[in-house]
Amino acid sequence: MKVMLTGGTGFIGGHLLKALTLAGHQVRLLVRDAEKIERMLELHGIDSDVDYVVGDMTDPATVQASLEGCNSCIHAAAFTSLDPSLMDQALAVNGPGAQLILDTAHQQGCDPIIHVSTMSVIFPPSGDLLSGDDPVHGGGNPYNASKAIAEEHARSMQADGAPVKIVYPTGVTGPLDLGLNVLAANLAPTLQSEIMMSLTSGGWCLVDVRDLSEAIVGILTPETGPKRYVAGGTFMDWEEFHAVISEVTGRDRALLPTPREALEQMVDAEAVEIMLGIVPGDDESLLVDSGLGSWRPIEETLTDTVSWLIENNYLEAEWAPNCS
Image (cartoon, rainbow, N blue to C red; front, side, top):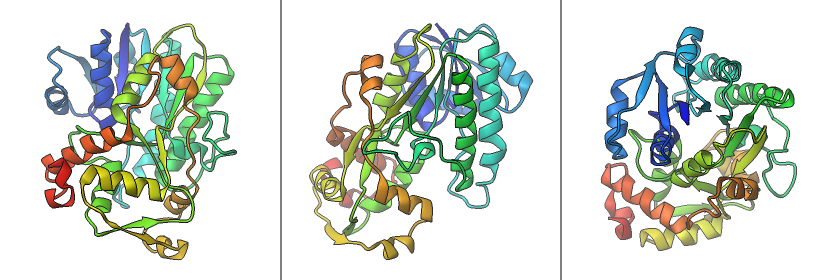
């Protein structure tokens, strides 16, 4: 199958590129920076040439060219930034870009069309598990608002019968990236401390980027219709996460009960709600349909992630002696 992939020089996209090539698919990338392609191929040990188109995902001619001759499409690109001065760019890019790519892919007969969404658009959950049947929640910070716009469009296409599959990952983590991704940027300072927070509810919900990529490639099956999948990975409450981190790093941090009021002084309001309200994901349909079966042990994921942080000088080895 010939697959057009957006976001192939990013964290999730780079792992998707590797999973696609290992599965024998031909890949065409839509990228903004061709220089990153060679770096990504080297990072993942991919020795085959990859076809690509350079341009912006909001440009119709570029998107049309990138999809020409492709049987399917995976849209994994999104503008993300931790810089407050850049966050508004998400609104200008993520919604319009997703609409253009999904529409053009459908017009060109791609099947399936996979849209990599985010857990945040279906948060807060309607029940005890995150579900693809949960309603879309718009608004909030520019990134979440922009992803909700893209989500609404993808769901409208599904309602019209288009072969769009939507995947909702939670916190995606793992080794190997060209830079410091958002989850890693939060994990590193968490580890670089003598204390860890313990809240009254919520916890951590982490999915290994390697498993997520394999699962997405596993549902790259035509004529199976529109579907929605949650990729929740492993849920851990605050005490469970502390225990796993202690085992993985070999360093025991003090577990500090943290009131909501203190948390609100450290992170924005939306992050507070997610940290206190996150629940496990209903992952069964993705694990079954993709053939993955189960997620790898979270200890393996965190060991590999922390080791990568140390190797790339994002974390000092003294904070995780078992991983250095």
